[in-house]
Structure formats: structure tokens, C-alpha cells
Picture 1 (tube, chains in turn yellow, purple):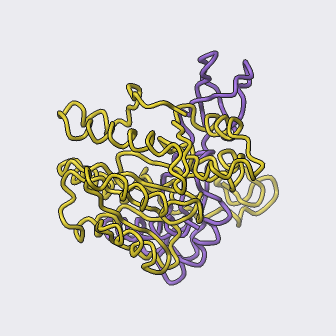
Picture 2 (cartoon, one colour):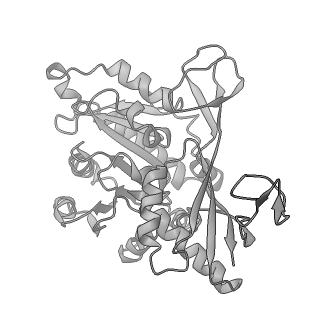
Amino acid sequence: MCTGCGCSSTETTVNGHLHSAIKNTGRFITLEKDLLEDNQVYAAKNRLQLKQNKALALNLMSSPGSGKTTLLVRTINDMKHQQLFKVIEGDQQTENDAGRIRETGAEAIQINTGKGCHLNASMIQRALTELKTPLNSVLFIENVGNLVCPAAFDLGEAFRIVILSVTEGEDKPIKYPEIFHRSDLMLLNKVDLLPYVDFDVDRCINNARRVNPDIQVLQISATTGQGLQNWYDWIQTRLSVITSNSTANNTIENHDVSRDPCPNY
Amino acid sequence: MHELSLCRRIISMIEETAREDSFTVVKSIHLSIGKLSCIEAEALLFGFESLSKNSIAQGASLELTHTPASARCMACNEIIEVEQYAQNCPLCSHQYLQLISGDEMRITQLEVA
């Protein structure tokens, strides 16, 4: 095509002007590849490895300060007598969060992403080789605090959980829709602060359902313990599916929570 | 800025392809990006320009084609084209839509010499 006039002629002179601007096109190679293909290969390996170990991997995503680490510490302390926990911590810098987890007695691997704004599946693959056998464990993967980038990267988890605290604002699900769209469960945290903040719970849940009609919601406070039993039941239900028969494993892979006995909220 | 990770992946895909199908110049890189994918075009273009320096992809143009997104309305059950997350059904105004497509991110073809 002539880049001067846009006509499709390949003649040198057409309509009185010189087609010196005929673009020298190269040859085309068809690729048709997903940009996240390599991440998906690692994610599939992780998923298989976790399934073989009957481990329940949960990818926890949120903005910084939503209470992820506090929730994990509380959950592990409340359930550790009946359940083995492992944690992979993602932060740009410091071992602080892994340190807080280790105080509970649970094994924790810290991944520092440096400038990176999210965890990816190859980082999890490396962390899995460092972890002592995750057999029959609940593996919490605490993603980098960020409501945008972690959404795009499958880590090989069984379920994705987004944590939103009531101090952040009820419109976050429609402001940052992708992470809510791709999550199976929204934990609405810090509900003990509801009397002190301007936050409409019903509107927030409706916003989340507008970007993901299937999302489940549990209202909790990791500090006071309010609503945590529902969260523990949610984990137990999914663990029992994973540790039972092979048809149930397919259920986990397909993210099919249609038979979930837990209340939505 | 996950676009930087994606740019690195685009460049490594091109380098892999160049090893299999010998070429030395990349004129253009064609991407098909779903309307609701998590790519910000400006961030991608900026990241590509800086990361492609001194690579085989230096100087190549990045051609983005935005593919439409579709969803099924959970009330009227019709499949409709959507412009963004959290929009209402244009047919019946229902507010819950199940996204079907629109978050793809693919490298479709390379123009090389």
C-alpha cells in the first residue's frame, strides 16, 4: 500500500504522483501465542504438584494495609492444632511478613520481588522447591500488596481471594474490577470499624457482583475475630474436597463452588 | 506496571522465534488485546520502547488491535458486546453480566526482514 495516498496500487506512478512511498513490507510470521503462555506453563506445573501433595493453595490479593498478614497470623493460630499451614509471602522488600508468620510456628518463604509489582508462577515454582513437603497443607500465597497487577498472573492456586477492608471504600470493586472479576471469594475485612467509617456494605457487595456475579463474600474482622468461623469453614470445606476422592479434585480445578454449603455473606 | 513483564515476554518470544526462523530485523509486532484485558496501551508502548533497546526488536512498531469483549446477561440471557466492567445490559438494563471474552492478550504476528 502507498503510505502517501493510501491507494493499493503497486505501480511506480499512479494518478500523476510518484509512488516512492510504497512501503517496503517485510514477510509476516504468524505466532498466535498468548502473552502469558510461559506463566501458564509454570502455573500448570504448580497446580499439578500441589494436587499431588493434596495441598490447598490460596492466592490472597489486596491493596497494602488491608490486613492480609494479620488475617493469616490469626487464622494459623486459631487452626494450627488441627491443620498444617505453609505460607509464601510476596513483598517488594523486607522479611517482615515472613517473620510474623514464623512466630506462629508455620513455615514461611519470603519472596522479595524488588521492583516487581506481583508474584508470578515461576517464583512460586522456586518457592515450592524450598518448602518442606507441603503434603496435606493449606498453602497461603500472600501476593504483593497491589489491587491491579496480581490479577493477571495465575500462580497455580486452587482459589483466588481478594481482601478488601472497609477503610478503603465501597467502590474499589468497580474502580479496580479485574482483581474482583478474577477472584472466587471476597473477604470484607475490618468490619469492626464499620460504625466509624462511611462504608455501605450492601453497595460494596453489589459492586463486586457487578464485575463478578459468582463472587462469594464473607464479612470478617481479623482483629476481633468477628465472622472468622465462616472463613475457617470455607477453608475446611475446600480442604475436605481436596483430600477426598479424585472426582472432587476435578471440582477444585474447575473452580466449581456451586455446591458450596457456606453462606455467601 | 505489569506491562513491563509483558514487554520482556514479547521480546523473549521474538528472540526465540528469530533463533528458529532466522531474521535480523523486526519491522512490526502485532498484538491482539481484548478490550477488558489488563493492558494499558500507553504503559505497554513506553515499556517496549525502553526494554527493546539493543535487542532484535529495537525500532519495531507495536501494532495493537483491540478485540471486543462479550458478556451474557444474567437476566435476559442474551450475549452482548460490552465496553467495560460493571456496565448494565444494553437490552434489559440488568446490572449483572457474566463476561465471556475480552481479556485476551496475544501476539499474533511479526513482520520481519
